[in-house]
Every structure is written in structure tokens, then in C-alpha cells.
Length: 366
Image: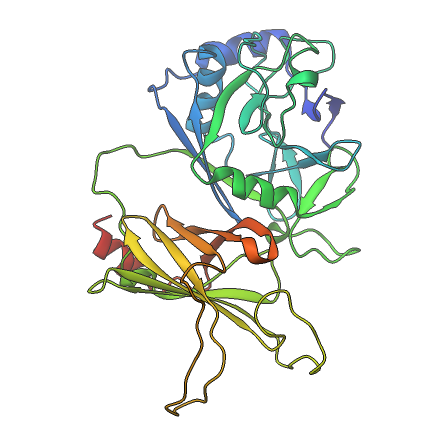
């Protein structure tokens, strides 16, 4: 059984004796000065930029846990909301899971507080014990909102040592939208994926994290290519997916956003976008490296394999746009803006199958 104390932002294991804490700190390896860390999750990747000039000791401590493998098989154990129900933080770095049981990450020791940067949305900070400013060890959290009024002014201020970059906050927000269960002990706000209440938690039910230094070796920029031609989806969204097709000779990419509905609605049904029977939303745009802005096209009329008139969105883009971005061959982001129904948002996507990854990497020079 893991013995834990309650932290200001979650449970933190505390079993070190003073002597061991000192020896562990002395054995902490000297780290290379990495600037970017990659946190892989089942819902997509989160990249964080380390703020080594603002919190050098905290950054060095965090890198030590990565380099020594202490974060291996760790998971997001807390998804907290504010009193009004809005997302507060997601937190990891405290526990690992071997497929059957959680275990606390044994810390190197505590580190001195280095509060300097405000806890605004997208910053990454260290968790610590109540009323103990210098008690942070291994646990970190991502601010999902501007939490500066609270976290900057309590417990000496919570040390921000990194910030989320790129599309990472879309993934963090998706994690925050997962179901939360009370698994007792240190896991009273545990985010879960496709979990059936009353059953044992398995690895696939947890937001497992693979934390590593990002390879910053210079190389060719990623460019969309036919290796992306595949079916894509968001694991936490039931009933919909995406078909993506890149046409390199035309420098175009086509996206079809579809649902799995098999029965059409009643004739008298209404729809906010397109007709009630619409099960596809298509968009077409020009490839620009790793990004493409696509005009949504709503077609109506016409018969299959028959030379009849088909009406399209006119002018192109008047129904809205989709921005499609890929950082690599395994994950992407769909950002949509549909003013006609006042809908905006983003969907992190991953492949349904990995068959074309090798082709994609070969074509992109990765």
C-alpha cells in the first residue's frame, strides 16, 4: 500500500529519510540542456518548452526524472475542476501503473521553490505539499485556465517551469473532457477512457504518459504527403471520424468528416448545417507544408452516376473552414470554424490503423 500525504494540488508520496534524500540529490545526473519535452498520451502529443532561465533547478529536477526513467509507465492521475465546473488542472508525475496496480514514484528529494512566472493557461508547474513552499518533488500539472489569482498567491507561489506549445493544449483540453471517477486514495479525480464502472481498471482505461526529450536534430520540415491518406479519429469521440486524402500533384488535400449513423432521420427533422440526412462534411484546400486551410463544401442535389446538377457552397468557404495540421505521421489536429452555425473548436486525431506510417515517414524524409 502506498502511504501518501495530501498536497495542495494532489497526493504526493513522502517516504524519504533525510539521509536518503541528500544522497539521491547527489546522484542526480547532470543533464543536457534540452529545451523541449514530448509527453505522448493516448489522446495525442503534448509538447512543452522548458523555461530553464526562469526555473533552472526545477527544470534540471524534471529532466532528471525523465533521464533516469522514473516517469516510465506514469499516467495522468488527476483532472481537477473549479467550483463552477470549469477545468482547473491535469496532473501527472506521481504514479506508475504496471497493468494491475499503481505505485508511487520514489522521488529524488524536495527542491527549492523558484516561483517567478505566473500560472496562466498553458503553463506547467510543480505540485507540492500544503504550506510547504519548498516541498515539490516529481509531480507536475498543466494549468487549463488562468489560475494566477489562486496559485501565484498561495504557498509561496507554484513554480512554473515550462509552457505548452504547438497543439498541445487541444490535447490537454481533451483529457480534461474525459470522464472522472473516484478510485479512492490518491485517485479521487482520476480521468478514465472508456471505463465501465464496477470493473477493474486496465492500462487502456488510463491516460498513460510517455515522457521524453524531444529530438531537436535539424532535419527537413514535415510536409503533408500521400502517406497521410488514411482513416483518422479521436479516441474519446464516439460515432465519427475523418478520411484524409492528399493529392501531391495538385498540392491539395481533401477531408471528409463523417458520422457512423446508419439510419436517416425523419423527413420533418431540422438541421443546423446542411440537410438532416447529411452524414458527410467535406472540405478541400491547398497544402502549405504541414498545414492546410480547407473550405467546407456542402453539396446537395444530383444522383449517383448521373449527369445532373449538384449545388455547392457558394462562394467557397462561406459555410466555414477547417485548418488541418500535422506535426508528424501519427497525429494531427482538425480546427474548425463554421460561422453559419456559430461553431468553433478543435479535434486531435490519430490513425485508425498504422499501416501507412512507414510510407509517410519515407515520403517526408523523417
